[in-house]
Image: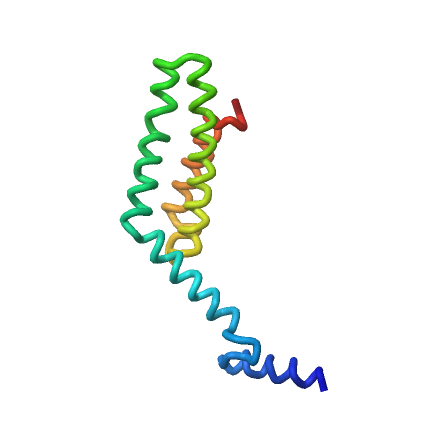
Length: 124
């Protein structure tokens, strides 16, 4: 009967074997996590976010010193984009690095993200 197929599938999953429906969800999660780990550890990923880190550190202050109302609006839009990028970086780092989530660098990144919020288009 139809109920036995579900029980057999559950038995395979409990034994760590693939079910009739394909690989286990845990295997899929491990594959995704492994792929994300390769991305977040790549030099391209690190370099990309290093550039945006320098932007976040210096551009809002330089704009405050040297800019005008129009430049403030322009940079607030770019900073909003950077805010979203950094949020995605935190999510990807949390998935791809086992020792990242809720550790020191995670909290430093969260604090940096929150401080960046004041320079975004959301707050302006």
